[in-house]
Every structure is written in structure tokens, then in C-alpha cells.
Length: 141
Image (cartoon, rainbow, N blue to C red):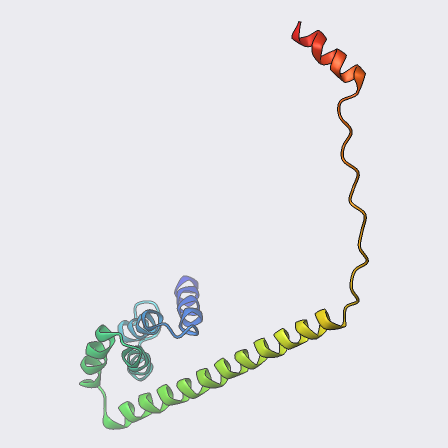
């Protein structure tokens, strides 16, 4: 049972990226009931979202499970899909705003940072000493 929950958690985390494949996979998990508790409303929601993102297999699966659902269940699934899209949009906007704030903060830090004092170049490493040359010549002989 724990393995099923781990699999479902991993797929739900992947679905946060919004990729059609991850959304479709979640639909399959809930439609089949093999790795998560079967829930046609939730499966329909994920298939709907995957189909909107261009996954044609999700469109076919959504139509299949809709035949087993009532009109109220389909309406609930569609409501959940709209809510997920709204939440995702807000998350995306929040992340974009955070990135802009971080970039602006970094730019201010660079502008406020005093210029570094020029440093003298390090002296070149000395050539081999006379003793090192003699030692090398002795080894070569």
C-alpha cells in the first residue's frame, strides 16, 4: 500500500509541472484503481486537463469514463479541472513575480557593491632551481 501512495505522490508532484503526460498518468492512476483508489471524477479531471494540453489519448479516455458517470459527476470533474487551472495560473504568476524580485534584488546588490580594489598579479612561479636541474640531469643520466 505504501508503494502505491509513493507512486501516486510522485505522479502528482510531476503533474504540478503541467505536462500533458503527467496529467494523463494521473488520470490513468485514478481511472484504473491499480495504484490509487479508483475515482472517476478525479480521473476525468486529470484526463480533461491532459486533453486541454494536447494529449489525444486523454481525450479518448475522458470520453470512455464519461459514459460511466452521471451528469453531476462530470460537472464536478469539470469544476475541479477549472479550479486546478486557476490555482496553477496563480502559482505560475507567483513564481514569475518571485523571479523578477530576485533578479531585481541581485541587480541592486551588484549596483550597491563597492568596486573591488585592483589586486596585484601573483608573482610568476620561479623556474626550477639549480639543485632541481642537477637532480633532473642526474636522473636522466
